[in-house]
Image (spheres, rainbow over the protein chains, first blue to last red):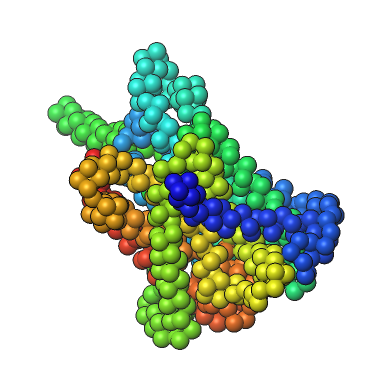
Length: 278
Length: 305
């Protein structure tokens, strides 16, 4: 009787698991299906769509482009955020409210709003930037920086960076030396998880890409949207790309948990000050 | 003469020392902010300025004059009213369903043993991060006319016809995919505020499970759950990629603020002046939510810690 009750308790989480897994399974099957119109499972299976995808010039270019953009965004965010948080901790606490406010913006404000604002501003003051990477990359860095900020901030706090750098200063080290040789080695997990989250945010972002560069710089989400909306949509190819993005998401999720020593339950969309997005 | 000279020297010395003091103060200020300046400048240009531009843009008409014409145009148009109403309705519905399903689910996960917990958290994390266009397509692949679930139901002989992905309930189902897991992850820390000893104490006082929840559990958790409800509501209203994929090229789709904004850009010029107004509405919702969230969490935590 108790056993039945315990099993019954499990029903909600099992139903949720099915709800989560079913669409993923459908996509995976689609990417391997020869023809699939009337039975529960596809009529046959093939690797053809995967091979087609990766040998297709557009598909491959889209994937490489998006990966490079996401890496650039993560690196830029680290370069921007780490010194700022370090300086706030060891020199000037008055920086903090400004960083908190800036981090709250991408947390709460939809990216479409930022995208249209940037479109209007760049049209007015810097039309030569429109449609270029020089607008898209800083925009992605700006909307993804809160993830890096929260990760770096909490790992600097727990590493006791203020005391570390005081000790290093007594030994005659300058700020850059301290940052590079004392602080960075102590906040590895924060840097890694922040970078992974920023990478993921840029990889999946569509509003800014669509508004600021459009098809001149087709990224994975934009490519999928174009395929989905096209009149002769190739759903099998779309399924391959969706599987790829799903794999990227999965790897990122596992990597974040791994670099945090398995302790974290908080990921991309779940942060302290909050969380918070889009 | 000597007097005059020394006086002149003194005054130049005075001026230059004033200048030097100003310069040194500027240097100190620069040093105080230096390492944070690049980030602050990027945030100001890429986050704050666009918001200001949208806000100002909503009060400027086609000729560059200050006016309320964008607002009266937008709020007076039936299509816009419907889009605004739809977005709010969708946000409220999604957040409420999320709360009703996610709350108990979160409680359950918080009381799981290690293995089950790790597995559930992994699954929820992946679902919370799988979003946008990919998720939209996944729903078409599962619940579309030729989707896997649809075909399975029909193969079993059930007269199952799926809700259209671009209809209200179709969107609600797709939104819940990411939002319920997100809600569980958000509210897990709150669940551990409720100590097991309190349930034991309540039992010693011969309270039923219902009484425990009615008088202890819910009063403690409700404020925090409402705060998470607010976040889910705001994020749902602001979602862009997912509804865009679900709407696809369906002509009779459920209209939403964010999708309308995107389409005014891609399509004709019609309705372009609605965009800044929509943007301001979204910003107001986000700001109110954020302030209310902080207030609620602070008050709820006050007596707990």
